[in-house]
Length: 143
Image (cartoon, rainbow, N blue to C red; front, side, top):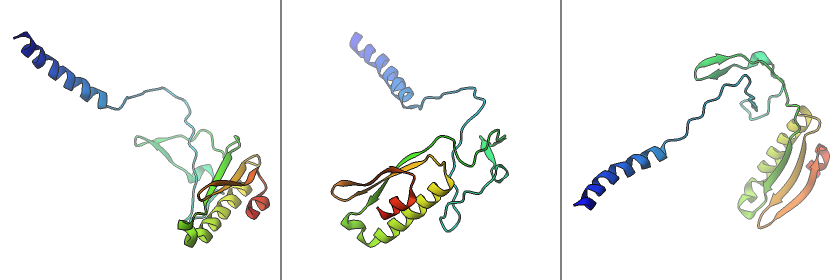
């Protein structure tokens, strides 16, 4: 008789525990400044880098937020490893891939932080480093 009662008591308890374990955790913090990094493209897909603070509006849960600090580029340099898929399955798209990569690199290295650097890799059945980290667009373009 005792095991039957234990089962009826433990089953709802285990169900409640399982349901509470599925709920995502909720974190709350009081902060004065939140950093938001953005990349803006036009309808043609080109990067737009000449935007000013007044070109942006930031909302948090529907409430408009003040933009306290605005930088066109972050002062922290980026280190980016760019991987280009050169496998046979992308053979038809390789020209599109390399053109997109070149436009990305040109925009990043001309408008970004002067200390940003990019390493270029290609991959098919193996990964090959074409160029180590550099800020020199011409040397990356050759790769």
